[in-house]
Image 1 (cartoon, rainbow, N blue to C red):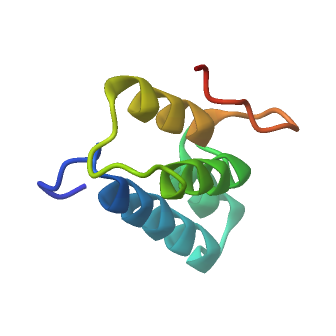
Image 2: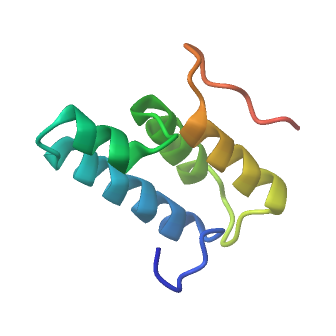
Length: 83
């Protein structure tokens, strides 16, 4: 990521979308695994959706941690944001 702060929603979404573009452009499964590392495609989509619904210029530490947790989540149901 560049010098832009990841806790700014638009920057977080841009980073997730860039990862997804690289993933879908990859030619082999090995390349795809390398791009995602510990993230999941579904988790990235969930994180993008969560961050886009926030009505703030800067995410709180709790919101950022939840968004990052979503990118790594492997379950079948999107975890809710702990209030």
